[in-house]
Length: 117
Image (tube, rainbow, N blue to C red; front, side, top):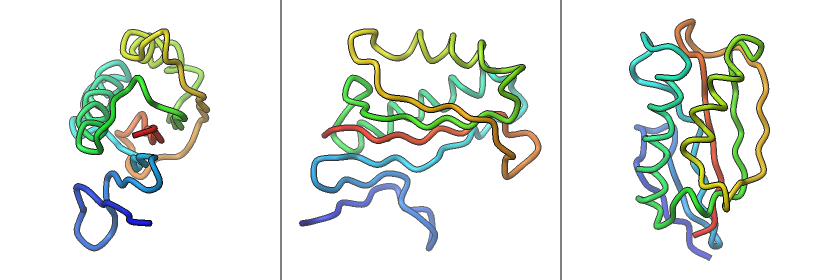
């Protein structure tokens, strides 16, 4: 079984890889960390569209999403609003959202996905 690796980040990771008909997208964080949760979420969803396309799939084939929020009480509703406007209603994936410490103070959200190819 082959593994296809795309968008390598130095010696640390591939941002997306495909194995056995499934695309695995690593945890993505926003590049413009000055934005609020809505802006950071939109950045990540745009990035997910790109990475899924690189892997030969799209958001309609997402199987599972893992979302980490810096402050779930404050940001859950706004993040969900951005998510719901992005994800096709007929293709809702399984999803988990939790509160977590982030690698940098300005990061409000991180998202990782698995999708069928």
